[in-house]
Amino acid sequence: MTINVDAAEMRRINLATVLGVIRGKRTTSRIDISQITGLNKATVSYLVDELIQEQLVQEIGYGSSSGGRKPVLLKFNANAAYAIGIDIQITHMTTVVSNTRGEVLYRQTKPLALDGRTSLYQERLVDLILVEVAAAMKATPPSPHGLAGIGVALPGIVNFSAGTVYYLPNASVSDWNLQAALGQHFEVPVFIDNDANCGAWCEFQHRNSRVQNLVHINAGVGVGAGVIVNGQLYRGKDGLAGEFGHMTIAALGRECSCGNYGCWEEYASERSLLRYIRESGGEKPGTASEWSIVEQILYEAQHDNRAYIRAFHTLGEYLGVGIANILNGLNPEQVTIGGMLSRAATFILPEIERVLQHRAILLNKSTSLSIANANAVAIGAAEIVIDQTLFSYPKQGSFDS
Ligand SMILES: [Zn+2]
Image 1 (tube, rainbow, N blue to C red):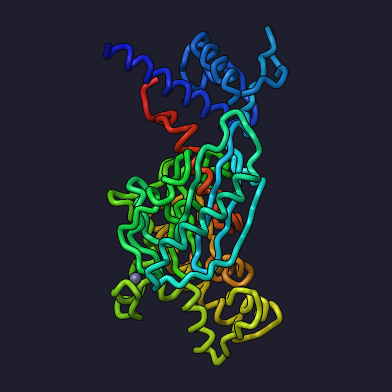
Image 2 (tube, protein in one colour):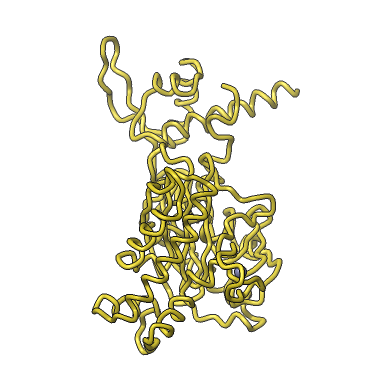
């Protein structure tokens, strides 16, 4: 009996491995897959036929040959399934429907006017998510594997495997099992994760395979990071990894909401931007418009408001200090910056790069730095769903082939 179970398990692993290879390439062939995975040609053929039957893989004609039969080209069916991703922020929420390649076919952003101090907060947040999911489901086209699931990203401390929220800024929440609260409403799986993790996963998925280590910084009301190490999200033992917003950058610095002093977040977030404006003699912009406060400050800075430009420069400098610490600790190939403050890239990026020249050591100085996709968090939440459902087997390299 044990042998049968192992054989079935091995087949599942091999199927996922072959699918992973096909997904990772624009086109490939059975012979290529055999060479990449080390699986023999007959096994690959058998597995590919099964994936074609499941409509996960398509044959799209013939490739070139340097002699002998031309290989049949294989392509991953990006529309084999869809997933819904939701990015919950303090002021707004964004919902996307994406295919298995993270290509977005529906996107909706709504303001989120929730008072986190009321006891109704959890109920109301669940209700709002249900409304957005219902609309997204209507926009999801039919597909061979249907809706794979729903991913929800939150700007707080989340235990992905337990499905619980430990902490949300501006909300009285602790040990809240949001996965269970949402799960009872749907027949498809629900996953919840930290927003920076989702952003990191999206940015990692959309880069070439040379990038295996990536840090995504989400800079907005708070500062968080998602860390990809060797092609996997690094979550830490309790799911708390990536809370770089609370690393100390000034030992005797400002008091942070976490109770510590001198946390990075106190120097590189939206509230620090407002403080820098005050300190350089500027006035806080009014809140008459529909724009977020960062968008208003950005607009004024683009129109030569010197106090606002100086504030962005100071913010960029402090973002740079923290990023240098992260680079020196993790040595990734790529750093991406997302969140509301990343919209001020023209003001903050040159400052970050300048600081890295001083504070990052050796080759870390030349680490590739870029601004993330504006919807990276929502797309990443959907892509985590795809990964946890369609590709939930050990990846290539994690077993002996
Ligand atoms: Zn802190």
